[in-house]
Length: 67
Image (cartoon, rainbow, N blue to C red; front, side):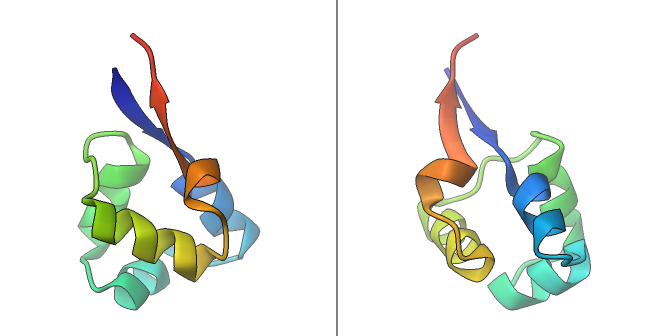
């Protein structure tokens, strides 16, 4: 199993850039890019921070995918 995320979808709905999201959660823009591309699985703390900033339930943004 792997973690699927919908960060990009919800970030764009908020009309937020990757840079702004990165600054709000304390990571680099490259981290957000990697996350959105599925190349990086965030820590629980980072996932919760992203959900809080995007004002979306964490389960709507991150979920387990089956390979």
